[in-house]
View 1 (tube, rainbow, N blue to C red):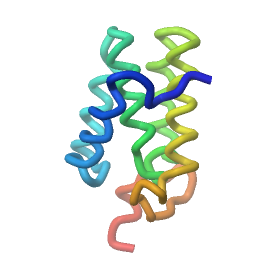
View 2: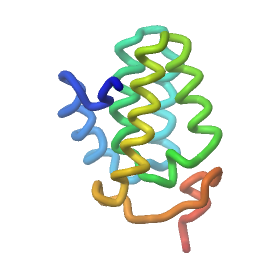
View 3: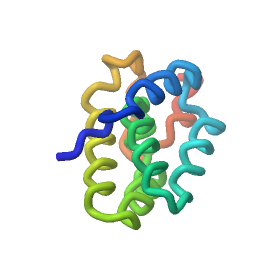
View 4: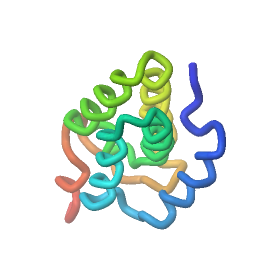
Length: 114
């Protein structure tokens, strides 16, 4: 499977995750902008950003649909990359400092204040 963190995007996405902090609505809007781009490189970068996302976000069904639809438009390699990025975030979210748990299908903002 294609690694979401490969290539020159790895360091940039780690920096993005550090600077962005919480993956709140403004940060998600930045990622969504990358999904809407026709440039395959931006989908690769978005996948790397998704790989650093908190578990709560990668269980949000609307967000996941946008990720997969955008990647699928660019072909099998980008779709595999996005699937791998989501899997990385689900498997390693707490190791990346994202300790909040979420119910599948619920946006992370729904958990704030709990």
